[in-house]
Image 1 (cartoon, rainbow, N blue to C red):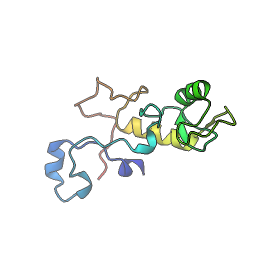
Image 2 (tube, rainbow, N blue to C red):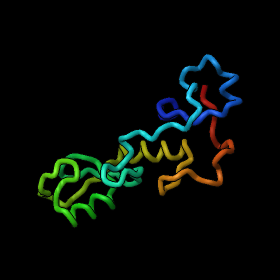
Image 3 (cartoon, rainbow, N blue to C red):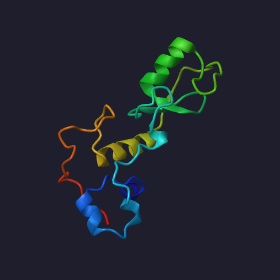
Length: 125
């Protein structure tokens, strides 16, 4: 389902062969879904966790923020707990998205593969 939900960038030669496919008209790389970005650092959350305020953040960002500020970055509510809980579902989605779009663990495109077709990928029609 992730392959259709978050389509890979389309090579122009492929786009000319599939003119009737509306999902692939945009030749740019797909935009990163907002739910994958940490509200604090605006980077892809490689270790998403849920904090006391029920918002999801990257683990390193929220732990540092709570230690320094002692409040929610989203609601400004005073932190009544410094414990965070892994968001396993979102983590799996992020990992799949990054794998399908050749994004490294740092949240950046892998340079050795950029601009080239990945032989491990299968074309989905």
